Length: 455
Image (cartoon, rainbow, N blue to C red; front, side, top):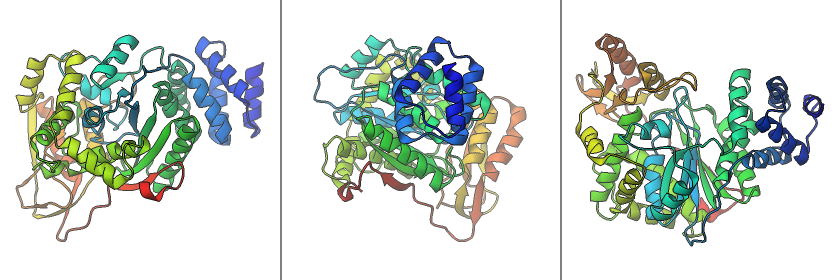
């Protein structure tokens, strides 16, 4: 009968106690509360909301519903990054080894794609032999020795979240701010972090499509994480155009590898010659810089950016990347062979500009939907993904093209898909006679309290 009382309380706009939330989460995990009552409470939360105390109580109860990590004594802070997801968002791949090279420990527990949002695990599983499921002891050992590991959520890590998210997905309650906040942070808090940087995407290809929604989610997560003892800040970043020049699981891994390799050949942290990576570099450096400030390893953002860029322009991040891949089972010869191949898909189609002009838009949502429809993403959590399909060599906003210049390439399985895929990729671009300044990539940064030196 407690579940009925909880439902009625939330239905009528009341608040549940910390003990109530812990009992609710326990009932979710052990199955003593039936799905129809859980769903009813989720719907009541969707319409009535939760106050900050309730959200914190639910988050901590979810965190404690399974395994939590505690790390050996070590001067290296334990840090992570979370992104709300976007098209071509491969930041985690170069960021984890950069953070390890900067002297952090990075236990990155990542997720899979859904809809047009790419999943880090799907990308890494396109690497021959790479294992995303490590036992807890092996996971801790790798983070301690290599400095970073990127793995998937195990069965005993925040099991309450898996059950609640599955029900939210089928009851129309996914867009609830307190439920989103508790879902994301319960998993991050279970990692035993000292500091966390959040990348909250905003734009037509983002889950939060308006600045107001993005700021609301970012503020809620920053304040809750800080209240739970994890130093946290949130970047608000644009997701109107794809990040980088490739979208698709293997193609994004290859781009990340080439980016790190190019940085390793650079001198003194200079930008690699490939200017199509400037947005990728910006977000990687910004995330690293914010963590340096949060952990008191840099006094302000300006010094932190210099430190992150200097490290990125060395061989250290690339060496950590290779060490992480090998530690997680990568067959290096097969991996190098894939890197050398032009494509893993049997059909590659070039998409050429039909007129000259300035590229003033490249619609990330249209491109994300194209890659999903080719098999590179999921419509439901049960769908499989094709690691080979996607788009690459995307032309960038602000670039001048002549008629016949390359706008991008589509990698697909069947010749019969070619004409429609080419049409859709071309339609994602908009050309004009005059250049237009692109919107800023980093729109804002939210800290738990005002700190002008951190801006």
